[in-house]
Length: 407
Image 1 (cartoon, rainbow, N blue to C red):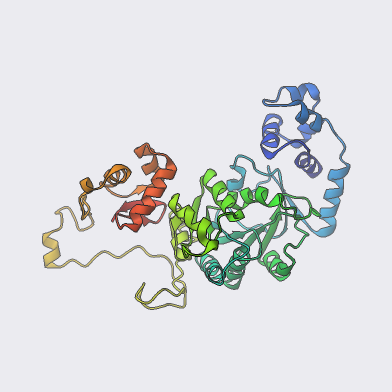
Image 2: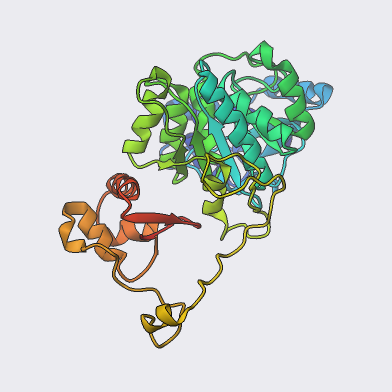
């Protein structure tokens, strides 16, 4: 019953890892509720404090929360519901209960990208966040944000303007609008997506709630985009949690002299993927969602990049085969024009250290980034950092589907 889920989620002196452990042992919150102290003692990792918390059987608080949800039209999705997002379910500390208003979109069958950044955004950051938010939506992605003032709100507004779906993850109850200046945006997100929270209705936006909710932002997503972040920023917490959860981290490169970009630029040194537009992000998941992703060529690029500007999105197409002339045919392998040369245009032996190790792995063709990490025997952070540097140096090129190849 829902009341028992709410009871479990509100037990004091327990974190979500503890709740998941107890739930895995008993199978349902009803069984947890009706168990006795002897049964609790059999749970691995059980402490006296947790056992005492579970022995408190008063359902008054849970009943009041449930009635409040009914009165306010707030939906409840529990950990065992079929609609509970699978990616979120697989993090180390998933919330037992999600409260939401609006409609819960298909977060498992659609590319989901979180867009985060600083509240004190620059004019450049606001413009880029809104533009990329719109591009992500036109490319077929759902945009997740924390609904904060600044980059978060701008990305959400851009996605909504493009006709996309937005999920706002809150650090308060879903009946609380914070910040108040985003009241109109909250209403639009509820109408064209959903507002979601692990906190019961009426929960105020205490500052310690926001670092906690950030794991949900990244947990719902395939990847997290950091638009702009100073050296101390909640967006960096989300990025770290995304990396810990195995999510991709994307960063819009910023001006090195601007304080609001210090943190996000530092992520690039640690291996985050630099991006210029929404397609740079969504194309990474083309192989996972081939029917959902479409290339948006409507965004404006610098002069000379990608040719003329288009106004309508187009479905992503495979690159055309090169035209074969008599001259080029002489230099092609006899077993067909599609075969690529196994050696790059530069001498791998001139590379040193980790870059040489990575390049030698890529000699025979493109590889998944995860496979490069596994085959190299190097720490993941070192491989990602070197790949970013090698991309900047023109040694490797990133391919759709989280693949890389020698250029």
